Length: 415
Image (cartoon, rainbow, N blue to C red; front, side, top):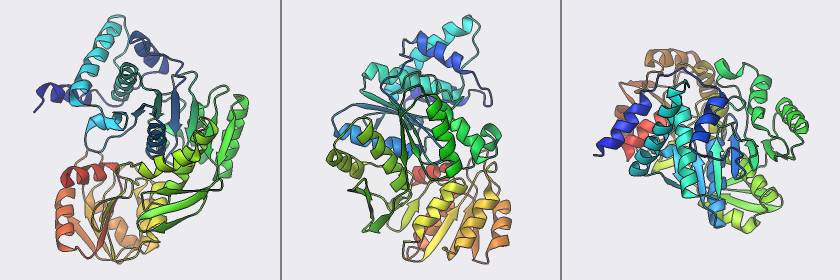
């Protein structure tokens, strides 16, 4: 047991929730640690779904080309260190502690000057940037938190490129309740003369992206959806007249990989053969990940994520069971309705997650019963449900979906 590491993690988790500092606050903290605020080696990634996967694909290809990488992502699934990785490996406990205390020293000095305490996300971002600076990585792949324009990651003035993934309705309490308002918030990461690579599916969103990019004289690479084929647990697809392969059954990853390809080929001019190898080696935890024979976990937790999840399952054969849980502040009724109308599952298992945001099982059950007459089973908690159904129903293909917190609990149990 690393008591010092546990103490540091407790300190971070005990930062009061709800407070938010402005971007100037983050800039001052980064300046105090002598972190370059231009960010010429930063690939800044925003969007509703697929951000982590895009970061993973880009990082894998860059490492295949021989570059060193730092990736900042959120949330973590099992361990907080997952948010900061260097060359595809999560930062060690000892390095995590070391970086934390260096940031804490800078925070203490700024507090004496009257600055507000940093938020949890801000702390993690600054720790990541200091870790990447000390490791002297070639490229930094920076995933936004909830939004874009006001996100703490949006402090770097001259990133190498901005990538905006598929945009859907989510986090409406912060970003607005229309696809257009959310798109404008995400487009807030677009910078003067910095290339923009974006997901060109929704016309209204595409119009906004091009409009904002034009105002900033930013070169635009619009990426359209391409089809792919699932075979032997892998996806093959053709992008720009070249065939690529992904080690996943999730067809929604084709768009995320295509965004990565567009950036790597058009901005960095990396050879397509290198891109192909890097993509095939890429792995992102919790996204249609097979963790055991006939057991998959997927981090789909909003309407768009569930629609993509459902589309993937249509090509998969076998008797399907669903282990489902969700947080109460998402559009859970719409998500459940989509799942039921797809008519893909012969059994549904519900369990409450160990999280203060978790939706009560009774609420989930009542909503499911509105839309389906498929047998519904209720378990006390996620771990009990997972153990029971993986041991007693091995003939079923079990899909665990509804929240990243659910995925995290299962991964913690399955390790």
